[in-house]
Length: 240
Picture 1 (cartoon, rainbow, N blue to C red):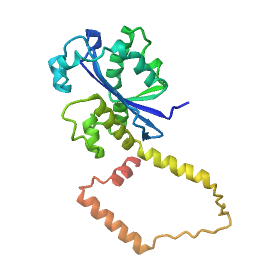
Picture 2: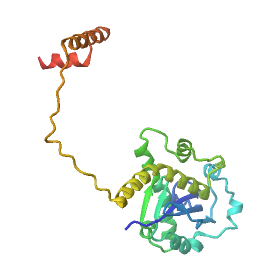
Picture 3: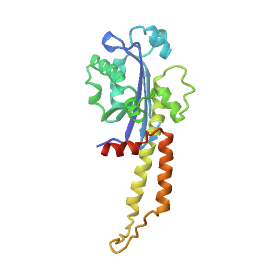
Picture 4: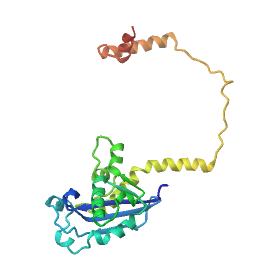
């Protein structure tokens, strides 16, 4: 059974690979129920017990000095798991965040992330299916859907989760409209009478000689302007 509780999640990290010892420095979650913001969000800065790579620091801008004063993931793991338990989770580029969450949870003696949630959906894959061949970063989707991301000077887990929730609503708005129409039709239970067309004589109207001549003249002009490369002429020749 699908949950009405949707969680949009994002993390910031010290680097790109949890297998190389990189850790989560921030986690942000935004909750929707019945597609409405509830305000029941979750947000933590986390002491990774190591320094951030220079490139990662340029992305999120969270200093090592600030993070040293924050709780460790092991101190927050149970609260994070309890918050996410049973929810449908949406993440942009989900494999990246899930790999870090799995590593952090395993270090604390917890099961893998997927065991605590109803489902995990990668919104980047959703966007690629909707817009194949186009840029589908979070910023690109904000621009495409008119979602205000002017405050996004640096990446921030909670802000990015909020933007992702807005983008998701825009991406799935058409589905909502369709479901609302279907639901409305079911509620009204309108019985449309069936018309018997078997007794109706339909008149067939053929083109006159003049119309056929004018039609042939137009086709000849088009064929001439295309140097004899019209599609219908090629098809006719292939059938001979």
